Amino acid sequence: MIIHLKNSVADAEVEKIARQLDAFHIRKPDYHVLVTPSALKEVPPEYENLVEASFVFPNDMQLSSAEYFSETREININGVKIGGSNNNTMVIGGPCSVESEEQITQSAELMKELGISTLRAGCYKPRTSPYSFQGMGLEGLKLLDKMRSKYGLNIITEVRDTTHVDEVIEYADIVQIGAKAMYDQGILRRCGKTDKPILLKRGFGTNLQEFVQAAEFILSGGNDNVILCERGIRTFETKTRFTLDLCGVAYLKEYTNLPIILDPSHALGYRYGVPDLSRACTAMGIEGLLIEVHPDPSVAKSDAAQQLDHDMFRELMTTLRPVASAIGRTII
Ligand code: PEP
Ligand code: MN
Image 1 (cartoon, helix red, strand yellow):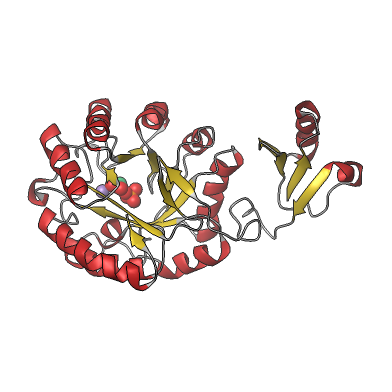
Image 2 (cartoon, helix red, strand yellow; image 1 turned 30 degrees about the vertical axis):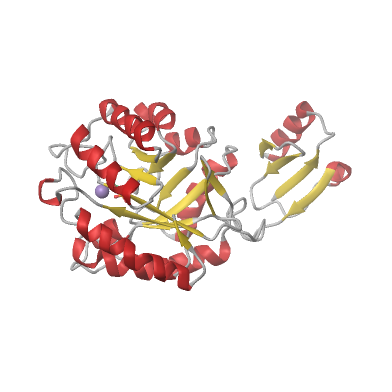
């Protein structure tokens, strides 16, 4: 249950009630929010006179629920806005990993050339083998920082584990929690204590309820800026790397208030279909796309098979804009 308590209730009193109700306390400028387990269905009578509003839910999808508020949350990333009444589709483009200054500079220049606001690249890579390239770490974050200052781009980069979560929060404009890190309670809880936007990717064996509950860990910590990312789930199919769950996206659009970004690159795993999928995803009316693109995919140190080259990406952008405008959206 979510209970809004009047602003006039003292913080210490709210903390006491929170303890009694097993609730999270989130301080808003004009009221207090208490989030209790969803099993609570009524405000205890002794607190009724302190309550401004209350909301009951069938399960622990609460702060993220469209029944709590029906509009998609607005997320403002240094002036770049998605959700709310902004009909923007934010393209996040860039390589899988930062590999060198030259490579990431070429990537940043491509985003700048195409009027794209957000550059992606990982520095801490959650690889399936310890012998594969693991990312440039802090050195990579510093290169991304340089790209932000030089080209005025927003930067999204991923956190792999809690050893560097503070570092990533410091350097990123959007913190990406990857599919494998989605269950990491340390990361989720730490990300609840910043107000940096968080892009939470769906684990590839995660059902929708578990996915949304992972988002609730961040939201209940007090961070309102959570974006969900569908990047494909594992099914019986082996011809493609994963299966992009667009039915799941339709569900999340209907039942949650969280902005959604689709990642066709990691879902398919091969570059040939990424342009078609990007257009299909855009037509669904989501808040953004994450597309991997590399100056020379043949030498990429991670996810080489799925990254577009720069010409493919340029061509894709020209066909994406009319698809977006056909449903009243703008690619940013
Ligand atoms: C990535 O974005 O490069 C990545 C590792 O994605 P995922 O966590 O979805 O596999
Ligand atoms: Mn990748």
